[in-house]
Amino acid sequence: MSEWSEYADQLTKQARRASRELAIVSGEQKQRWLHRSAELLMARVDEIVTANALDLKAAPDYGLNAAAIDRLKLTPARLEFIASALREVASLPDPIGELLDSNVRPNGLLVTRVRVPLGVVFFIYESRPNVTMDAASLCVKSGNAVILRGGKEALHSNLALHKILRDALVETGLPEHAVQLVQSTEREIVGELLKRGDRIDVTIPRGGKSLIERVASEARMPVIKHFDGICHVYVDKSADQEMALAILKNSKCQRPGVCNAAETLLVHAEIAESFLPKAAAMLKAENVEVRGCDRTRRWIPSAKAATNQDYHTEYLDLILSVKVVDNLSGAIDHIDQFSSHHTETIVTNDLAAANRFTHEVDSAAVMVNASTRFNDGGEFGLGAEIGISTDKFHARGPCGLRELTSYKWVAHGSGQIRK
Image 1 (spheres, rainbow, N blue to C red):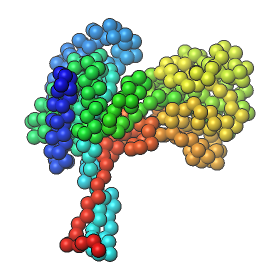
Image 2 (cartoon, rainbow, N blue to C red; image 1 turned 30 degrees about the vertical axis):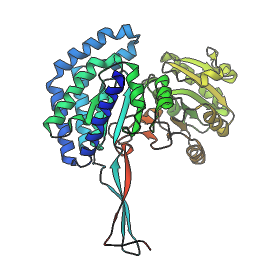
Image 3 (cartoon, rainbow, N blue to C red; image 1 turned 180 degrees about the vertical axis):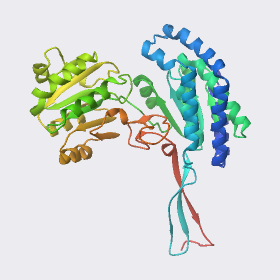
Image 4 (tube, rainbow, N blue to C red; image 1 turned 90 degrees about the vertical axis):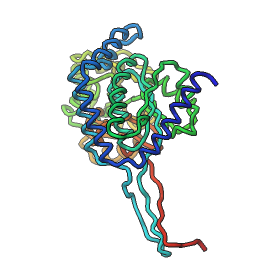
């Protein structure tokens, strides 16, 4: 047995034991842990910032660009925000033990369905150390033990944050191994953990496409995946064009490097002549590069010619693909062909068009007259999220507390036997 195989066995055995203990922990105990974690976080700000500085110093060697370095950076203000998020999760209703439904059978048997934890979660993520706290808080609040594997770029930061979580677990009487951090950046350990389908109940990868493809290929347990965010804004012929410009600007430009940012604009042919020049002026002011179809380039001469590959691309940058479509059917057909089924929005004053769009577009979130940027756990009222799933099973869209649970059937009898 290799060194990494032994390490994977150790982590998963400890996690499995911790998950059994967590199953009977009260909601009050979990709240105390979250509040104590927030207190320790603020008490150790200098320690965390010092550890984070080591990661920031090494960031250029890992090829991180300015935006990625900014996501990596922890400041006292950002740590206060993380502490507030922990307290917010503490305030959310505890999902464990929730009675989903019940019925009494003719023989007197009481049959109930109750919400339970998934068990052990293996969470793999990149760069952003704040995700360490989000994932741990959601997993433990929902009764799950979690094994965290952050990116090498944030190792020192994650080690400092994990120490806080572990110390708070011990202080509040929760199992010490409810939150474990893989303390090696070797790729081999990920492969070993992905083999442990007997002890890990679900793996959640959050990062680049290559990471998610590797996890989906190697995992021997269910995977909640978050593939590309190729999100669309469709401006219908009846749209309020000023509203459409505001929605497009927010969807594309507010934070172009996130998964719920728009990557493609679709415009109904009947309004292309009036809308596209206004859109071009706004996008130029925001330094957005436009890549369009032939009809788009008629009204935006500065646009580069778009290819099919452009419509398949998640830019995560100030680049936007644009296409003029003949009608609502053309927009839906384009989305069906090119979307990653993350988030799409329609801007329209036609209720029938809005209803058809929401029924026919098969994505995790479909918006009407609102920015794609709202597909987010906090914005949807879930508190923090562990990711946004583009799967259909077992969770879809922002994954909060309830998405980290399953259910079991519990039947209470008084001596009934089946005949």
